[in-house]
Amino acid sequence: MSPESALDAAALTAVSPWHVPAEVVTEIPSTNDELLCRGEAGAPEGTLLFAESQTAGRGQFQRSWSSASGLGLWFSLLLRLDINDSTVPLLSAFPAVSLVETLQALGISAGIKAPNDVLIGGRKVAGILVETRPGRNPFAVIGIGLNVNHSPKDFPEELKDRATSLALVAGSRFNRTAVASTLIAELRKAEHLMLESPETLLSAWHGHLLPTQAAKPDQQSGFNEYEATA
Image (cartoon, rainbow, N blue to C red; front, side, top):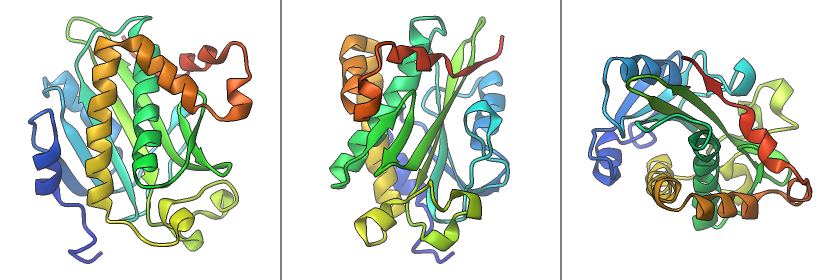
């Protein structure tokens, strides 16, 4: 990976609204696992950890997540807030809304497959894993995987018919640091809605649902798909 293609930690720190240095590591088993450990040790809200590659990246239901080196955004964000039946649906909704609106800012139309997969043309471009730790010092870790500069050969054989990337859709490669900077800003905006106007956030989530999803009467049932450990 050339220096020009590497994520720029200083640039990501400069745009972070949480005023906590963003960290970029070359390789790690899982950014979520690392921030869960750091959260237990007292890491501050707004801790952002990006990896150029994950060797044990995972999504919902412990499914593995392909995290090709230098091609996507593989990162986690730590937030400190009460963990209860009211906040769990919001924690699932706000990163999904952030991703769709980031892609819209890049000129790419995407939609949400409940509860929080992001699809373009029926193919998955991003996934989210929310893991929470309730208790005396509650916090949540929001893990995001976004396929950015993949070509078809970069996907495992079993994903080639189901996954896509921003570069495949747009026909050109993206500056990943610029994409990450836009996404960080959108995450902050959606987090503000989550805390100050949750009805507005859920309305945005519903508005971004794919048409076949929006027709279902009990869509919020999908929000139960999260992981919490006491």
